[in-house]
Image (cartoon, rainbow, N blue to C red; front, side):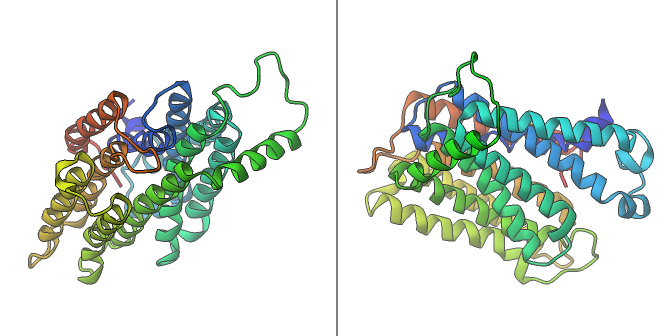
Length: 330
């Protein structure tokens, strides 16, 4: 069991539900239904599949540099890992399908992005980081598409799928309709904030195995949060932002990132892998901020459901920290 938890980077799994949750709450104006659960389960399954796929793609390198990891050590046979990866991917697409036709397209986009990252772009500077950011952005949009699209379980249980074409036809039509809706546009904005942050963290993480690394990439994660703060101010207007939970939580994320960055600015700098874990740990705080975006003319507003989601995501931060001491997060 420990080997599987290590393979799936169990600390990081606690950063996944917040993406589709935030997207769903933005899309529905703070209302929950079963589509949110479908979107969360879809993202979790695809994310877990991507982590296993990452180790499968890196098997030769890990055998040389990280022989104690689950696959090189033989704790998990490669065939078993492939079986789990394929089935988790299919499970993620099934849950995406149950969340709605447009959500299914987002799920497919996420899977394609994960495969592209693991087998092609990961080794390419900048492009790999961009690819990873897009994957996390798709995860948030999966929730936004589920929340703005048709009702949950959009095909009756008595219906059967005879061909693939109708699914894609319905999905493309639904997606085209969503793109013109303001709530989905705000979902795109939120996805962009998360994607930008993940891009900067991923770019920094490529130096994890090096004894020294340049100074500029160390500032990029906190820089992404500062840029995101400007975006929030643009979205929310010039009111008393600190009286609202969303910008206040975003400020907490900036402070945490700044503290993490200060550790990297020491001479010699702090070891990079734990700091990458620290930057990843900030994600639930960002997601909580997006869950409680205040009322604006486009009907984004807080509800008991959005506040509860934010509290649950904030509770994930100490859990991530505790698990991070037992399992590696990268």
